Image 1 (tube, rainbow, N blue to C red):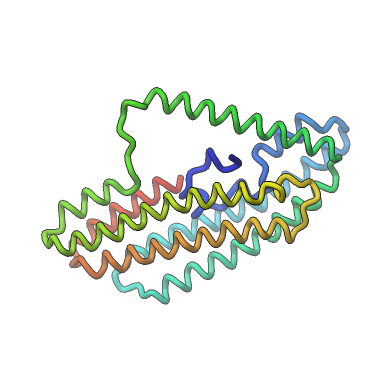
Image 2 (image 1 turned 60 degrees about the vertical axis):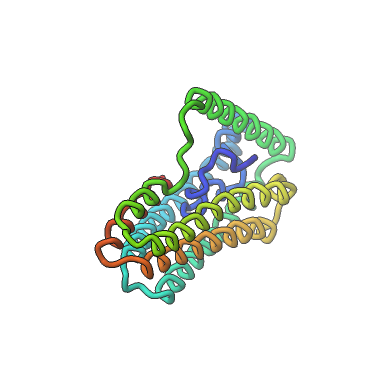
Length: 259
């Protein structure tokens, strides 16, 4: 699976490094497969340029994530504030994706079909090796209970909220957020499986690539909506002191999951 080694939160909040070309370890593949020195040099120069563009976008993304945490921390933030924020970052993301798609189309024109096929095979092997390492690492920790997302938040709200009904209301919304994360992970995997024919085509058009980006963006929006719902459920069922303690823990966990 092309995104099997990516954390969901990184995919949804991050710049999405997989979106550079929808091919894992593309640059390494070019270095390994393309033998013509002049053409390889030209392609690697192009990749260096697109990585620079992606790096700048990543800086913007990190600033936006910091802005989101500040927004999420505010008890006075409105639903319109959240909608405006997420609309703005989606607009910026779409512009970035358009630029990246242009790069992939132009770079792939410089590859021969046989080279592209070999790069895909190289990518698949690289993914399989990473998955094997991850599984081996997981085996060593199999006796340790797997911690669910936002468990510290759950423990914190249980400790600080004395009204059982309000605690229940928040936990219900937190459970919905966690369950939605599981669903979104399946949706992401399913989306890549359904569109495998697109990202595996050397001559996939910009329109084709934007179809993939749009699908992931729609999944992102679902998650953003759940985050917003949790924010207001927490606000409606806490006082200022409870709010400050819980939201601090929640934002800290969100930050760790976005590494």
